[in-house]
Amino acid sequence: MKNFVAILSLIAVLGISVAMAIYIWIELGDVEMSGNGIIAMGLGVIISLVIGVGLMKLSYHSAKIGHDETVDKFEENTKEVN
Image 1 (cartoon, rainbow, N blue to C red):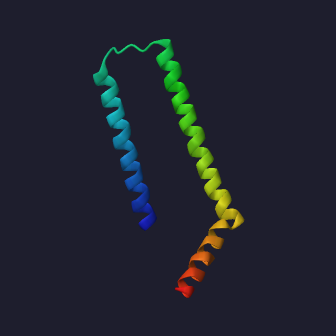
Image 2 (image 1 turned 30 degrees about the horizontal axis):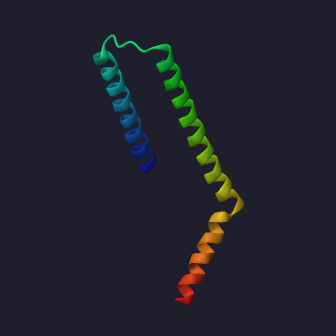
Image 3 (image 1 turned 180 degrees about the vertical axis):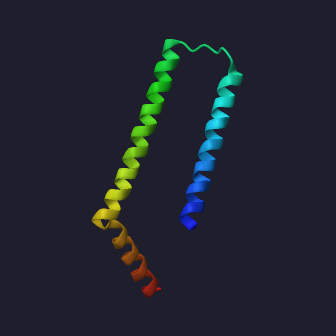
């Protein structure tokens, strides 16, 4: 039941975000963007996606290799000393 509520709330947030994006897009009207602006926006989207995917990959890789456990053990050892 908790999963259903979580998924339903995420779908609701996604729907509201898409609706707001469409509303803003329509309200902007005929705003023209130059070729350089389109290229800059495209590069910004691509670079943001690459950074996000790279950071998530590093996060999963760190958890898979066990770097997170070594930090937890270090924190436990320092608590015992203090």
